[in-house]
Length: 310
Ligand SMILES: [Fe+2]
Image (cartoon, rainbow, N blue to C red):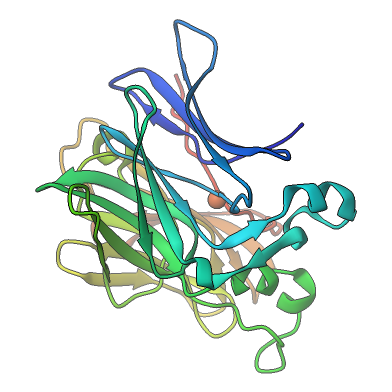
């Protein structure tokens, strides 16, 4: 049996839980959420049948709900098992399906509802929370799934404008689900690009928040660190000519109280020198605080993590 889990489990410190999502591929495929705490082995929290599973990279978590954005990049599981093709090349973009937001109760695992929106594609959820009868779901949205093909190295190694597939932008988007009425509203959180989003997770995940950090691309490749103020709809950025920063990881100041009191850590490739450095930015201002050069390049990665020395 083939399973596909996300690399983005949620950790709920208040409940002492880790939650992740798995697609279980078979003739009767299922979306499954698992939960694990310190007391018991992992158990299935919610399950939902699907005949054409969507590609799922992450999911949303609010205090009461699990949110699965079922984008219309879908696969025929039986055909995939026999195709011999790379995993992602079995998926098809079928925008007429739209994108469906499946909302499950964290307590009991029941499907709270399925809420339809126009088609979009996403890798990364930013945050989710409930406010004024709405379930707010923030994520980085693409118009379609062409980013999957655009990220092939053969394509990326061809510089614009000769590149056959441009790298499309992701935009920070807010979806607002009316849990009673069933409607879904939405708008961009700022006139900005944003991917690889990070928030003050420990203090603000599942709750209203103000700031999200990430990367954005110029004409060529990811070339800036971005901070979006989702309350004001404003974006600021850090960039340096010829430099290509990776995911900015927010490290909150120990004992700090402000949401953006801390530093952002990003591994940056200096294209001119051919070496990388670890950049530390003030998370409030995006001013440079420090950098640590290394005498070689560090290959690009998608995600990073910071762990305190216990
Ligand atoms: Fe990811």
